[in-house]
Length: 404
Image 1 (cartoon, rainbow, N blue to C red):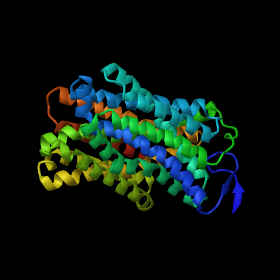
Image 2 (image 1 turned 120 degrees about the vertical axis):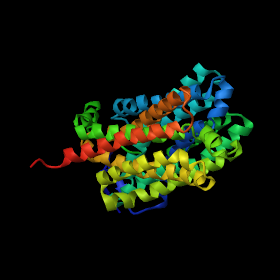
Image 3 (image 1 turned 30 degrees about the vertical axis):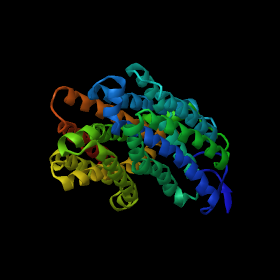
Image 4 (image 1 turned 135 degrees about the horizontal axis):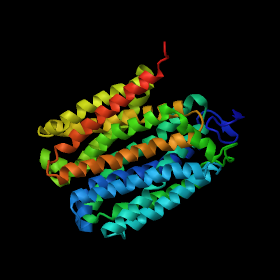
């Protein structure tokens, strides 16, 4: 066992083989990812119930998803820059405390304006928590295990879609749509206690400053990676935001099967995260991104027609979970590779990017639905966005090649 500087920029930490204390620390951080995953995705599964409960139609209720995403986009860079010098353990506890209060408040928000506010505030800690938690987790282990530590934080998000989101959807359908948000608040409060108990203290990041974090934005490749995330994942959210009415309308599933559909999607997410490492090793990060963007185009074009066949109606939610979930860690790695300075900002911006995609996709989906084009169209919007993502990835590859 040795001591040394943290590879993510924190003060001295113990670098050792995997121990139970490290496992508990990573599990505590992953619990916060689980809570975030539940609140982000359960709103999509409960969209019909939330729209009825707040007296708006389903396209308008899609704005709640966009409001949460807007909170992530605002909060991720704001917290990363404003608290660049703060000890990361204390910052994570503060972020989860805010998250607990805002989600609990959603239970009492029974009007459109009130729920828009609470969903926005709920989103503020999301990106900063994930980015900082991954950096902190990576600092607790040996260099060769950093990818594992980052994957474990993201695993909380995947497990949320297997267990938490379907359970929350069932509870919301039968006991009231607001109760899942109370449950998320309790999980967030438990995360605060778990981080306090099991995550070791670390010194403030030596030499860190808001200006250093902002320097990451000087690089063209950082902006291209962010744009790939926005348009590439915008299609996924355009499709998934309306998964409940899409499955009942096109596939003809009863609403009682929606929790099962969400479980299948969550299993796809977990499978995708497991495949991300091998995909990156075999294809390389940027080439892997290009291949996955091409796969997204095919998937979105086939999505609505496939739902008309019962067997494929179960398969395609799984595929919808797999392909984007392979892409997330590759984009995270790409951002950190090209950011140079400003690692904390880069780590958080990936999640801000995904929630720009969340808001953009949900909004574009609401536009085609409000225009009366039907539930076949959100996935078609997704295909268009995936084409843009592929073009951006090819441009990034082109700019990376040395000029002859």
